[in-house]
Image (cartoon, rainbow, N blue to C red):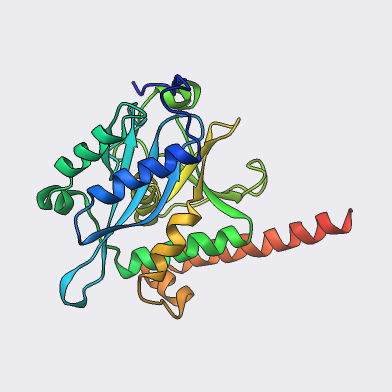
Length: 263
């Protein structure tokens, strides 16, 4: 089972600005010369942090990326696409040395990933939908939902079979549209496992998948543009898929108009 978040001795690690600065220095000084930090985020209630690393590639190839997790407890996801480093919270010297030992060329090759054109258009769609207050959700099994993060969610075994829904970002009981598109859902699972999406539980056994904007936006700036997005999405996922999300955007606009008129 995944270990629940723990409370740290404030003298050991308080997750304040100075702690984050010292951890960032430890990470940056441990990176190989061809790797740099593109984005990062820190957990509010624990000593966990996530780092999006970019690996420069020779010959003008698309860059590769790597998700690094530094934490003192086990992640509740299994089959995630992250390099995880365990540390004693507050021991910046030790974590720096651990990273130097871990970030070897074979490990970088093993955990790094490049994004295809299909990945790029999918990430752009996720951001586009968020602008219209729409997000993706999955319906968890009762066992996983009741256990919160004390029950592992397997991104290979559990996630692809979960019911996929497109819904309102601010109210998960509104406008839940079932969507069946296995290739798209598989990609969502990969992005979740790479911290490009983060999760929130709802009271309806749903897991809300929200874009990690501070990661996705700088990442997309490093990648080629994707003109004719709707046509490319139709080619990748089918015209029915496009029709569903376009109609969801229209319904969301109508809902917003009605809500505004009641004020």
